[in-house]
Image (cartoon, rainbow, N blue to C red; front, side):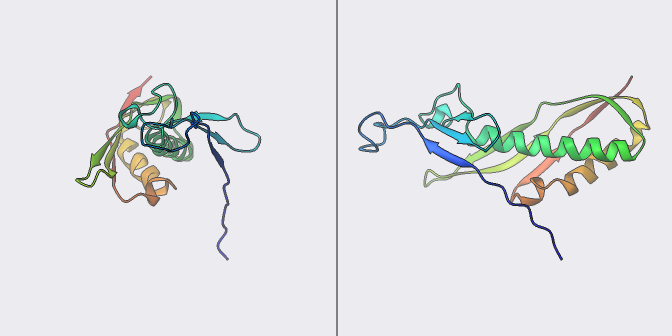
Length: 155
């Protein structure tokens, strides 16, 4: 029997400036993302969409989720392969295409992990990243391409 995991979050809009949504510029995009037992995340829309650039936006969080999920699977697989990873840092980026009707959608994401290891065969890097991508719950759920351009540093 398949197992399922359920996740819950409470999103509360805090951007009512006194007029509600009387017009497109009358309200702020600020909101709170709350999950029981965890710190609340201050959210907003991207600044390009009248949001607060100092807060997390959904696009930031989607890219962060992709990168983090890949990293966690990679570390698991690296450990299984006998690698000793000393550091892992990813400078990921993504592209969102705007459609003529004003809607947008992500068209791609690219991970750029730099992995430093003190033990293990660096020649396995591409295989481990490929397997991590295939196992990542987030990447498996997307309808756009995620690529990985990894660098391995032997310490």
